[in-house]
Length: 121
Picture 1: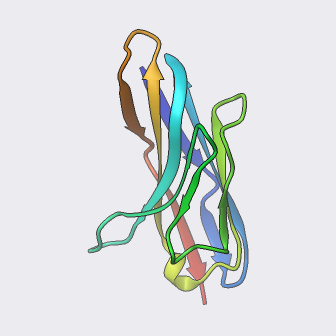
Picture 2 (picture 1 turned 180 degrees about the horizontal axis):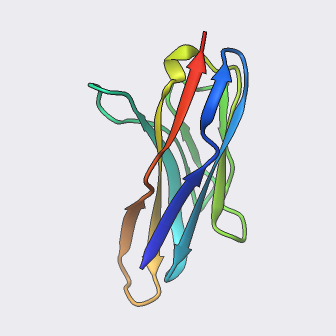
Picture 3 (picture 1 turned 45 degrees about the vertical axis):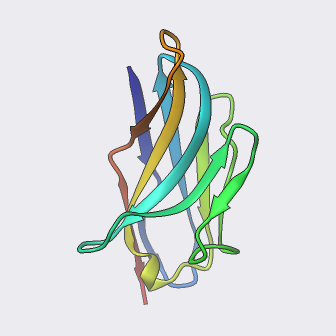
């Protein structure tokens, strides 16, 4: 019913920038929140950024001041601008969307497949 697709990952040198995009599509009535997690092998998935429908934002301490999440645009796409990247930012990045469906009053969370970010030193 809902698809979440990330793009924009890749290889970048330390100090560089990348912009990830995440698009939610399908039977969406409204979006309550969208955000990003990241995960490296052997570690728990870490929530790094999120934005609500009221434009409230959350950033993990590890990315605060370097990453910026944009509110969803008319196409239900959010962007994660990542600046001053560090080797420790290397991870698989996963986007989620918490949406209200057109045929249900409940909110559901949907995940994308992930996009890989590698920061070389």
